[in-house]
Length: 369
Image 1 (tube, rainbow, N blue to C red):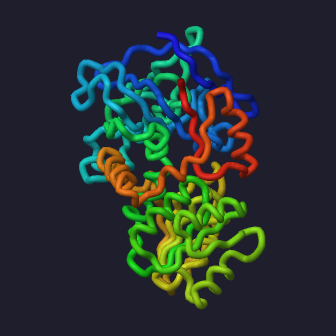
Image 2 (cartoon, rainbow, N blue to C red):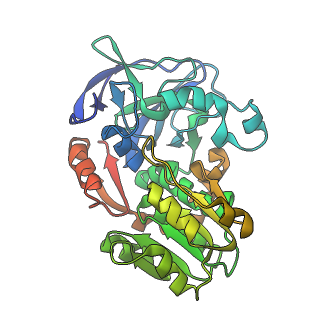
């Protein structure tokens, strides 16, 4: 079967909208007609050469669509189901899956992180050459073949754009604040980075009735958007020392929990340095390959500070997608406001250039005919 897809052939080269061959799904796989795909900074990392990946590659790992074909061993999905795609298709058998931590599934690490399906192959090709699917998704295309566990059934009435961003940004951000390190009532919270993930952290923290909810960014329009999502205070990182500004806002004490969502090493250091005694810094954003941080271990022991990571919001997609969408349907998560622009596949290069300039707010979504 032939389809249109946006293909990445290497850093420094424009994405190309072209035709690919897509094979039928195998035993435990499904083919999904993509209705919407979110544009994530992780895709930009690959596009800019900050993360390595084999090419040619169909980027995109936030996606939603309709199941159009199923493998003969698929049990939980049927043709016609509406699904949101997960970029950690878990095996359900390893020690992490059976202990309730599928975001750490070792099977997903072994195949999704190499942009292939669980059998080590891909269902895409161009003129006979294999084409990889980013994180076993590859949602910048008309269709995607994914593992059954990578397609989560959702309410058919959900806007595809909303469903797509729940597949990564929303779950990553909200999950960090309710799963990885749940915010408690009255705690002071810092969120560094007010992009799609950072705004989702703010939404998740806001569910817990925090004290001060401080947002940091370098773009004023993003800080204004952070206020709309519930931030009580904002800090322009270009205009002052972030740590000093946080101390001033908290009476010199610092925050109880800080989330780094910008994907910058300096942001991790700022989050950690902004903590009150006993506080926790959570690394949510992912930095470019090779970046390192410097922290004071004496302060860690003397003030009982915690520095921890959050992968995919410590989420169980099969449970948390529905949980998050339920909160959205009840009006508790303003996800409609998160989706700020909708573009066509042929506009992806322009969208990524805007992202590189820091000119994108909220989440941009690609809509397929």
